[in-house]
Image 1 (cartoon, rainbow, N blue to C red):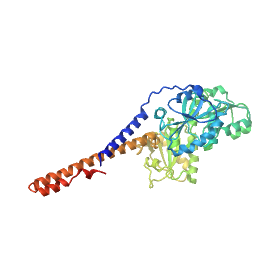
Image 2 (cartoon, rainbow, N blue to C red):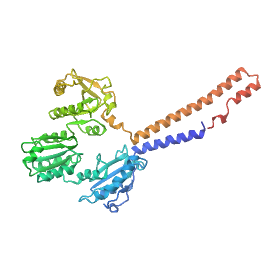
Image 3 (cartoon, rainbow, N blue to C red):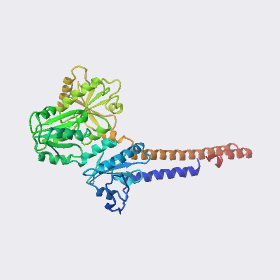
Image 4 (cartoon, one colour):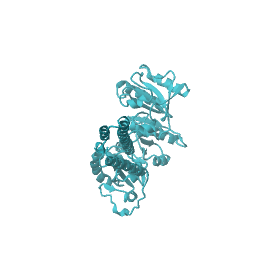
Length: 450
């Protein structure tokens, strides 16, 4: 290995180290751009360190795409943003779309905790919220309209209710207050605006009451269109009762466990009743999920989730589940490092599963449990196990260091072996000049050149 190659390896390691430092050490940058240079004209703005803060301050609502030029997903997203930009800019309360090369402007990537590409954040009056909605232009526009909608929409007819639900789409839960004063939920609607739609129906027919399954007023109905779920809350509407219902209803009664839903669980303090099945999409599992929803509606202090071995085997493995495990299996997970098995209810038989679920919950509440530690990462570990910018940099850095150490060790061995050979030759054949010549030829500097 030549000295030049060693130097190149060393420089490579230094460059990676600097990149890592840039991700974590903000670099002070003065912003000289004035806010009047920006306009909601339907084009996608290109932002950098010098004009980012000014752009955020210029608009009430701005969606920022943090991208990398080499990212394939980013390249596919770009034309969708170009198509959505003029539509969003034309709203009564316009939404501007901008983008930042986060691979280049690492100060911004670090400040807004960008750990994967593309990452989009919607800035509402300067406050960022991660965008987790669809990426096709038409659906993206529908999704983003929520951020400029009223905190509480007033619905004055059956058709207005239907139109509101259709406009809201399926990505957020929907709360509709029937016979409820707007002021009762307005404060909480503002607090949870980034997570749900809120409305109050002033006039409605009995048909609506049948459709949404409530029989008296006032009532607050929560809908999860994507899961075809609804819940009804009849009060009390004061104290913490109303907020508890809203917080618990932000998640569906029974939810599939995947990377996206794990992110939602980060903000929920409840333990998770986790049911592990073979395949969450087969007929038996679908019937079981309905039973879990019924149990969840009566146990709102717990989150009910399910995961299929077929869908996410690595996650199921952390709960001591393998191909020999009898499924379905139920545990109570604290969302971190521990979970509880209920003695006598470790798995479910095919018959009368509703009764078995009830028995499992009774056993858990009565403390007939065995506490265990998961064999893999916690909820944060699973989320952070996604490949990210920092992960890539760190892996490359580690590989570079290993290569450098191996190269240096190899060089030391190559330097030492010929010297040992030469010393041995001098001891054994000190009187032979020919042998000494051969010994000297055993190691030549040019032998190390690549």
